[in-house]
Image 1 (spheres, rainbow, N blue to C red):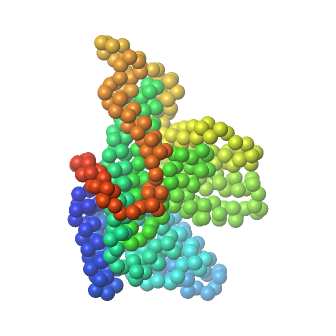
Image 2: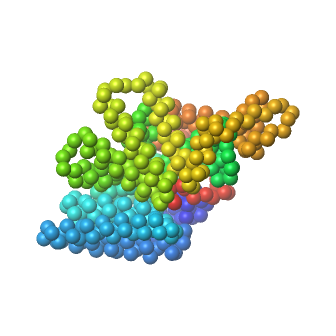
Image 3: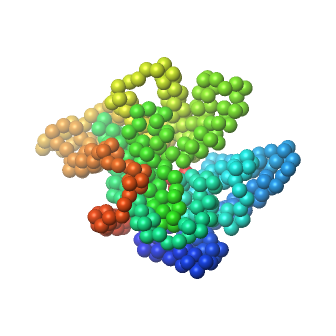
Length: 466
């Protein structure tokens, strides 16, 4: 079941909220936990029952291993159990990602969440809880499939809080506000950019200069509005249950360096990489030096790239970002600053180029787009009254005295998206300053209606494939 679907919005969500708060109102705390778990499992199995056994086996095994790690007093045995738990989780991820089998929905996210829990348990940072509590933590449907990646210490105390079990109208208002913002991003913006990105990547045999840049910009903005839209909806759903989930995006396209970009883009994954990949690699080094931390930085991003999937495109994507971070740190060490606009321009174009590799189905598809972006396949310049022979004239940019109507639409949409990304308050800022007002409800209602008309074509979120 998708957040951006009629069954979710008009049936599943109202029933999930109603059952949860009614049971809590009558002090049926255990039953409310079970209700939320069952609702989350139904949400998960709506995509197919074949995924359910994998999720349940993963939860059972990790809870059992965590209990063994927590109660084991012998240090050597405790280390063995901990390493075994990591091997099993990482092994399962690798098996499904690189064996060619269809990846179970949400596998990466609920596995990363459980790896973090196992590490926290090993380091005695996670309190002992019941199996029911643990299952509720992993299965919580707003974060189950595509995050944000939530730590046990962030979510579990909120789920257990008696204060949070009472219905709060201000939290429902905030949740609806954030959910609507995410729905607009997904349905009205991301899907429109997707229609422009898809033909260039998947259908065209070659791209002219402007069509290639149109294709690359379209995917960059599609990915941002798709994934940040999902995160906004997840955070909004959390608020409806009086749960504050961590923000995942903080205006990443404003970044003036790749270092800054990764503090703003997919923030919960960045924090996971720093805490559970980068830091252990640094600790493994014989000595903490600048050189060794740069090696650790590159390796951490390389691993993050490979985590996204099998294929040279992901290897190159992770390696490029690792190398860019090293270069940024070297430049920063020299204490030299670029003019702000130039720093932003270099960063944005690097991110845009890297996303071409991330999106391409293989290296040949990426090269095709890069050839067009560099003008190596020509620039189509049709004349008025003469039929264009441009390779993408049916949907792409044509350069010269004539532009197709959809080219003007793309330009307006692109400019508007830049304005939104740079001039409007982001979700983090809007959430902090939110006050329920009639005019906000009115505008949200109008936006919601527009989204409903756009939901006749249901598409999955991009990060479902990871």
